Image (cartoon, rainbow, N blue to C red):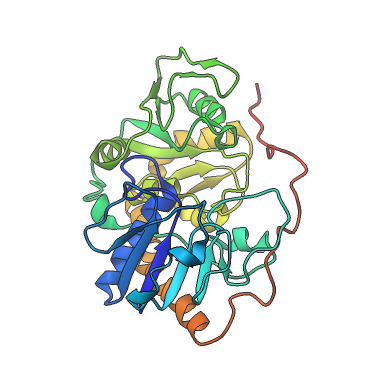
Length: 331
């Protein structure tokens, strides 16, 4: 098959970038499996294993598709301004609070994510282990970490700091800064809280290799949570809230889910009771780019054989009544 992967941002992602890294890993895995891949992405993109075409969101989408390149199926990763001129699927990567119909061939990124739109069509994201290298599971672990865009209030970095303080363990925040105006002008003085800003590549890998666990008390329904899979790859058990995809990604063997800071802090104090090897193996058995690629190939084949991925257009079933889901900081 020849698949055109479409996204409205630049590839490759050098630091933060969930969707960008997912479609990069997917394209690479497809090529390794013998398929042909092209990308249509934002200007400034480049790729060493597939042709790249420029996506221009202000222009009619159909006119931009290189119809003379033998493309079999278009894989959208966002909505476009008109129906694609070839068979297609779309992956819905994020959340929305707007109840509008999505394409019938929409794929979600977790079972919970799909169910919230009245669908059962989902493919888990998967990482390329080659980008992370040796997890060094026997390496001494000196602290715990938070990984995510700390400027997003739903990610609840404040809650992560609260849990770390209760547990009496240093916290390294990867994806945030000490002075933050996006959360009501937050300036964190605690010397046991370390901020690293946005990190990628080996700099991020090194921080995760030194961590004994991940604190992730999100206050929204996490669609997937790539940071969780990355952390587990390095043998870090996850201590988080039970929202969205989290129960699917974090079974009791690799972490604990709860809404109370004190409960999570107790689990963090006992983090060495979790097997780093089991955490790593869980990812390798479920959440690699090869797993993701094979699942998408099944979806591609289903559409190319004239079937749809959903019986009807998926629509958000219920608009959340509260902006932030419950978290008991006990302060």
